[in-house]
Length: 607
Image (cartoon, rainbow, N blue to C red; front, side):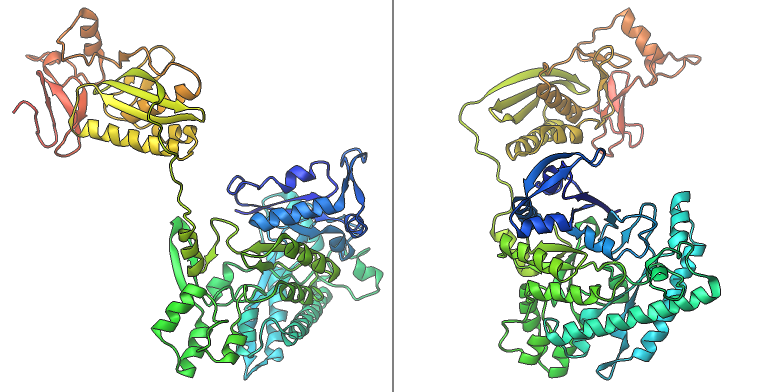
């Protein structure tokens, strides 16, 4: 699941927080945002300092130059999209229940500012379904808005909350968040470019209508069911407005998953690409083409496999001279649109949304840190409650990829190359007893740590020796390519074969050759000798020397592999222990009467 971490810009640890995602992949499934205050923004405008305050004592512990901190936020966002910014004082200016508490954070996607122990209760209408003959069917939309508010209010009462406090606070304020998705598709159907004044005005009109009708629906519910319990003292009460059932009624969520189910564009985002590659589970990739774009091409009679191939590569038709100008203007993509239009669109919706708007401001790969800063400042001035930016290609893994971007990555040589091997190296060699005999392991190293591993299984040949050599080569390749040795250890340790070897009191067992290599590498990293004091688990395997003593007889008699003596038979004539894997069927071999044999397919080495 997703998480959100928000830290105030005046917290003493703010610099460490801003840079904690400097290395991609270190903190996963966790969104980060900085809570920007009005005091900080004033200091930024004046190029002044602002205080860092201990949240426990209220003591000012340090002062920082606001522009340096702002530059660092923009620099990190330019690098990998995080942290985002949350304008926390703007959020609290629009807090409908300030008498209950001050809002400190939002949900993971930023669209729902919440008090402690509140919960999200969101719904989204696919507005592209309300386009009728080039116009919005407001009568039908009103009907759906009223039903949606009623539905979301019901959810609060029938829901089972994981904590008592969450249930109590959710029912005390009864916040719901009705929003939209399919905005970009609506604009396409109405033949309005996303990056136009007409689209921005329509956004204000549409969301204003939804917000007004949602509030009317909530007031109607209040007449029947009563207002939310903490209504008295709320901004509605102070303004002398009629009772309302829900403290908030509107939110615009990203709708990343539900928009896929609904078959429409997500939230208020523009079309990402007319053809794109989507990353799904298990690293699979799906190539998709926008259905409205395909339909438009077919209507004009210009659809062709060649054109689709070019679109798959580019993701955009902005520079396609063979596509009519009106289609190029309407089918604009996220990266075709200048950042300021993204921000203006978000601000237009925010004017008529109780909670907040989740939207990503997309930047091309060649965008600068100053471009990021300008967007932050513009969003603050226009009244946005937060902002998330993403520069195309700034992360190795992103959910949506244009095919052209993927080809560029390959051209950039994204694959790691192992560092070259010098002619002479120093190393250590150890002997470890394994089920198949003596395994000799050599670990060579340089100034950066372990460099390569060589392993040899005594005089053995065949598959076992070949597999050990293969493992050693792959381990060496990983070490030379900068893979953490302990990650390699984790992969190798614990692999078991039929003949484990005890290595002394308190030291456990050598489970297999890969396990031995992993343990040897681990001991090397910990500064220990890579050899062990070995003894056979439950019995001796030194049958090749045919040395037996009373101790071995005793162990063999009590081994789990032995069977009780029966009339006319002794345990020494029965199967004694596993001695490897059958080359024919893969079942464990057993040792009986001086020969290895398979009880499953009856393979034997003695024939």
